[in-house]
Amino acid sequence: MKKFIAMTGLLLCFFQGNAQFFSGERILNNENFDKQRWSWGYFLGFNTYDFDFDLKEYSPNGPFQDKQYNVETTIGFNVGLIGNLKLNNNLDLRLEPGVSFNRRNFQLLKADQGTIREINSTYVHIPLLLKFSANRLNNFKPFVVGGVSTSLNLSSNENNPDDNSANQFRMTTNTYYYEVGFGIDLYFYYFKFSPSIRGVFAINDELIRDNDPNSIYTGNVEKMSSRGIFLNFTFQ
Image (tube, rainbow, N blue to C red; front, side, top):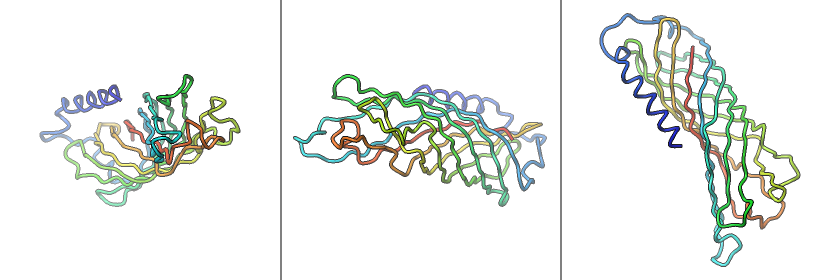
């Protein structure tokens, strides 16, 4: 996570240093770009995913009183396409289907050895977003974005009969999210470049319980849902 934040900070410093985008009177690049009803593009980027756990409450002498979970996050990769519909001068409707790749290391603390699970995820991620932009100033325009999305986890193991007793961590295939973020449109001579950062938060419970109701991995979990940060670089 620290590396991800550092990367975001360096990006912001880079654009802050390029003062020609932010001040002074300039010749407008791509002056007619935002007059298009429809526009298309693609994005590349990075992600980091975590899990948020809601745990059941047990008595002090219950079977799970000392069970805690730790998730080691890594930096993954995003790639996808963009379809943009202009609703008015400041509001756009966007569809951004893409694929994201990520790995999380899940560990049960205060338990016996062998409790680490490496969770490799490949998501087909489909957000439907509203983008609200400020008025354009010279060759830049800040924006905020929010909406809902769904994903298909191709590595979920949902239908695998084996569970954690056989070293198989299982999640639901379909997940639903809400998303919020911000970014900036930068207008160049031949294209528009838009770096953005976005929080992605799952709504539904993604955990498939083990067959044993007293499993140390899943027995005391009320809800497990993903949360992530996307840093995307869009070209249109």
